[in-house]
Amino acid sequence: MTLQEEFQSILEEIQSQSPLIHHITNYVTANDCANTILALGGSPVMADDEKEVEEMVALSSALVLNIGTLSQRTLRSFLLAGKKANELGIPVILDPVGLGTTDLRRKLITEILAKIDLTVIRGNMSEILNVHGTSVITKGVESSEGTENGGEEMAKALAQRFQCIIAITGKVDVISDGKKTYRIHNGHEFLSKITGTGCMSTSIIGLCCATGESPLYGALLGLSIMGISGEIAATHLEQEFKEGLGSFKVHLFDALSGFILQDYLERGKIYEI
Image 1 (cartoon, rainbow, N blue to C red):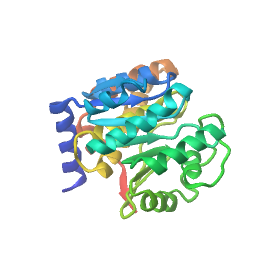
Image 2 (cartoon, rainbow, N blue to C red; image 1 turned 45 degrees about the vertical axis):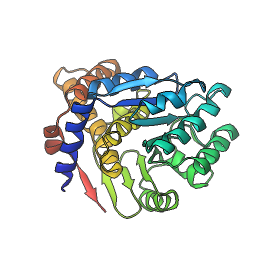
Image 3 (cartoon, helix red, strand yellow; image 1 turned 90 degrees about the horizontal axis):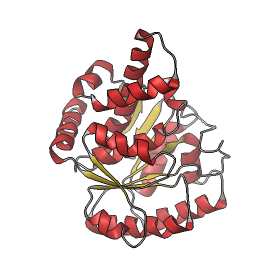
């Protein structure tokens, strides 16, 4: 199947299934991630208590693990939910937010990688370098590195090592399953100026993977949706002669809620390496 056919199938499945996406995520962006899933036709749930995460996973079509705001309450929940998802064959998408800033995050990711079979790891270049084991100091949760510095090689190597999809976001996104590697040249600079677009991208990947279609194409479509929606949102600002980030965020959600395959056909810039 062509990319167009793969993407059409995923979008149709989202609309017909409205899959439930279970997030164990951070409180900074939880609301935006939930609204992103709703905008695209899915159903979000944010449950992180260890006494209910396994039961919630069993009701879900994908699990998103986001370590943005860690607490002792959620540490065990990550592992319980991830293992349950593996047991049930449910995709697990990991967002290693801020990895490289503290020992707690490094220890948790080491344990997750050892005990959970991941479907997709989505992070910026600094975070992915720290997943690899190359110590890079991150600026809070922002990246100090770009994908142009070895991103393609890193994505392919890690995909082979962990037997999952690696998605590195930046000015140019890089996605690999260890055999095929792609670049995505969509997006807008404003996406890096509002909190949460990385987390939202991970949620969209989870939604696309929840359909049962190929996780490689799910990751490609997920990042394309965010990048193209950012471009559409910026176009509306230009037409209104506005440059405010608040207005951009409103238009971003409008673009997400109205996203159709035609948007990809008109704007998509995906290149296989």
